[in-house]
Image 1 (cartoon, protein in one colour):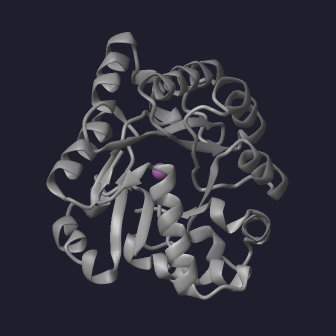
Image 2: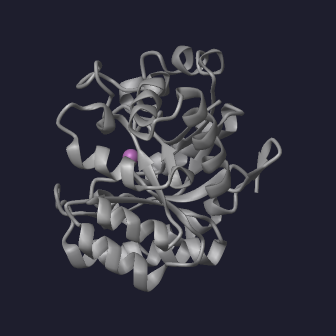
Length: 260
Ligand code: NI
């Protein structure tokens, strides 16, 4: 079974055919999807998707581009949603110095507060980091390491930094980028990180794997990511599928058919 550890099916890119697309997942062996919160509205929509589809679980968190919308009361609302039964992670949270929509101090402040929330409610985290590798790592190391664990999503830093995260107990999220011809660093990361710390993800609708690069992504394309990882690791796609399924269940703390 395939586990998509990070998706955005609430995105408007799926408004035309969301239901039809999601009805194809079971037949394509996609057994579980975690729909991430990004904005406050996205957090709510993730909860609705999780309530509607048995195989969808929810992340609760506000993306660094959107943290300007947070205040103490809104944060209390997020704490409450963390306790709903299908919430499995605090995410996606982190730092984004590429789009730089909020100033760095604001981003850091709400990143730290949401890391604290993950500790308070005892949920693993799902971390977004873009052009902010060192600041993200420093905050993770001082504020969070060794607590709830989690996933560094769409990992884009060096192989050396991936090793450091694994030492701290985190998992590395690998998506469509690993299939791109020019993705030398991502391939090095996959080669370096032990197989028991790799999980797969789409970040759909973004980052479709080759040969669909630039098009709308979905969990149906994850076999292409699995194949690329298998090629780098010298494993069969079946082995990679099985190991990444188990890894995702471990980091999100599923047991039996239900999380937690
Ligand atoms: Ni995302």
